[in-house]
Image (cartoon, rainbow, N blue to C red; front, side, top):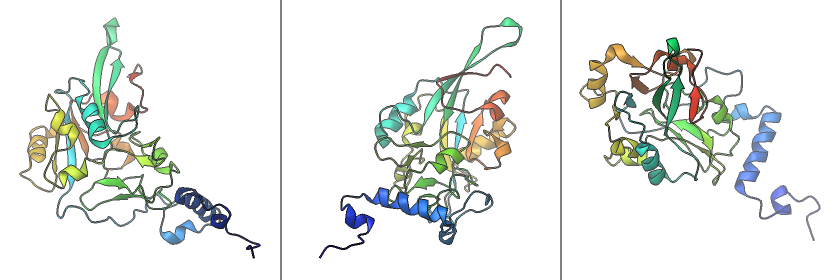
Length: 260
């Protein structure tokens, strides 16, 4: 005899796990149950889930020397080849910004590499209702695509516009520092392919690492994007114009920074 009160999964055997999880998250949010899973809700800005294991003793960061970036997009192409995001979506790219000059001079074009900042206080992690976005002990922020329900909370929480919903998987996607390459002793695709040597990645915990040596040489010139957000980003820039420190947003290929 047929079940008079079939469950949603019984009603439709083809229901995907993602649909089920989306419904579950909606119910949890409605009835205030999401907090039982230690997922941060709006109003809990100080909550950060415990970090998951990473490469022992390391804390990865990246240094971008804008004086050496020629805007060739080799990093963008190599990242796409390595990580296979959908066509038209990118984990890293070099955006071209037009900055007006005083006195009627011709505008200056600035090439700014953009990627996930793998912050020490990542705002994308606590807002995830299913803890699909997480941070490892080595600082790398990742997305568990088996858990992600594509709600987009993390995309909205990122102040660096570094995340997107993958058109093919319908889950959150972003730069991972190519952690699969780091774990076998290789450089991230974007670093390896940079023709100008503008990108350096390394262990910030190692005082003898190349990144720490370069940062020590240019200590007074180091800047990060949006320091006022207090996310402690671990992507550092040399040669970043002051106008870009607080005034960068969006993913437009060309953005006019006229007010600076």
